[in-house]
Image (cartoon, rainbow, N blue to C red):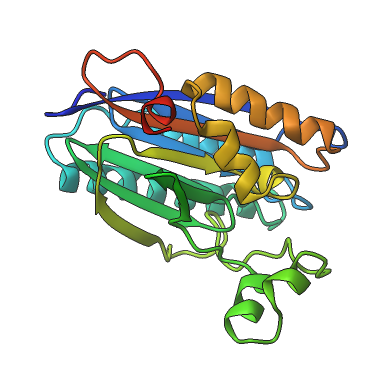
Length: 254
C-alpha cells in the first residue's frame, strides 16, 4: 500500500506445526486495501478452520477505502458478518462452538488501527524497541492483571490457552482497538499464539531486524518448527519504508 509518505512491504507465512494434523489458522495480507490479519480457529472446538476461514472470506471483500475511518467501518462490518455467519453455522451443527481469534492492523495513509479479539498478537518495532500493541483476551492475562500470577508463572499455567473473547461465540463482538500514527522505519508483526509459545520477544525482534519482511516470516516459522511447533503457527511482518527504498528498515535503523 502506498500512502502519502510510505510504502508498506509485507510478508506472511503459516504452518500446521509438528503436532496438529490440520492448520486452523488463516492469514490475509492485502496491502492495496491496507489490511493484514491473522485468525486462529479455536482448538478443541468443531470447525476452527471454518471460523478462521469465514473471517478471511468476509475480509477479502473489503475493497479500497476512502479514509482511515471508512476502512475501520468496513472492517467492523465484515467482522460482524463473519460473527453472525458463524453463530448460524454453529446452530445448524448441533450448537457446537465455532470460533476464532482475530488480530488485524489497518493502515490508511499514515494512520494505523490495531483491532483484535483473543490471544493472537500485534507487535510494533520502533527505534529498536519492540512493544506489544495488543493485550491478550485470555484467562491467564486476567490472572496476571489481577496479580494472581506473575508473567513467569504464567508460562507454565495449565489454562494459558483459554481465551475470553473470540469471533463466533457471542452475538455482539467486543473488539479492542489501538490507534496511532505510522513512523518511517516501523515494523509491525501479527502472529498466532503458536508462534509466541516458542519464540520470545527477543527472538521476534532479532528475526525482523535487518531482514526483508518475507525472510523474517520464514525465519520465525523455522525457529518455531525447530522448537517443536506444538500448535499451528502464523506470522505476518509489515515494514514501513520511504517510497523507492529497497532495503529492509531494520537495516536502516541498525
